[in-house]
Image (tube, rainbow, N blue to C red; front, side):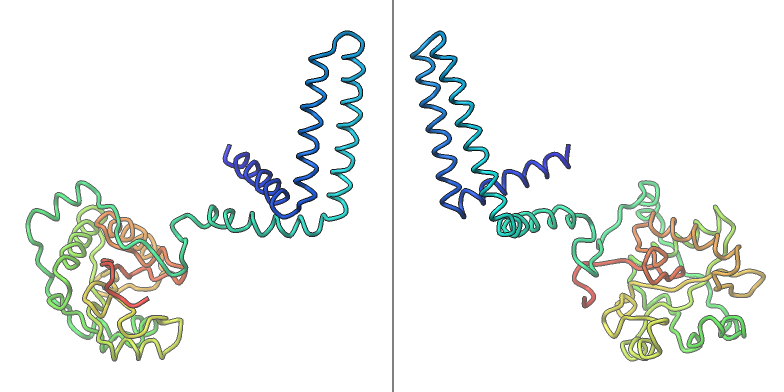
Length: 279
């Protein structure tokens, strides 16, 4: 039904453009309507064989007018095609681009929160876990994946309280429901560090200072703990399964998960607040 409506709109638009742009077209239509009404009137006033002859003449005249219209279209088909494209392309583009991704780089600033999660968020205030020893973040395995992690900030108190509560709830869900212990790799990020990471290349981040929710305490990068060691790499099947569960829990808590981005960041979660970051 939608495609039929678009096609009908296209045909009507082309016909109207022909009438508006070409006086000859209007003359053809007016003459056709006038001749048709005259013949119908004569046919109604007449009868019998006379009416039949008139009807036959009407058919011949209509055929002649149709041939004239077709000849006109053949002679000016390039101009008519160009006018049709100019009139049809804008509404068709608007229809095709009227989804969520209408503007490049734009994404929804809010996510639906699971009802059960919403109830938990209005309950007890969760407390941040005890900080891990610094050597945990500087092992060879961790440095290979995140070489600049040793200077990252992991202070929960620098995070936005609303975001921190949601992230802590995600940590609880991951531990109690799925058996994954989690740790924060980096929370608040200074503008200077953001620019330093951006200078390291697009494989690290494309966002510069104040283009990331990290600068506002509304984002964090997280990973898993297994046998007291951080597991970050997505090549680990256990960790990859954990990231999928983590993404689902984060989105259920109203957060945006980086694993859904074009440049996937599986450990990243953020609370989007309209008008916060620069686009």
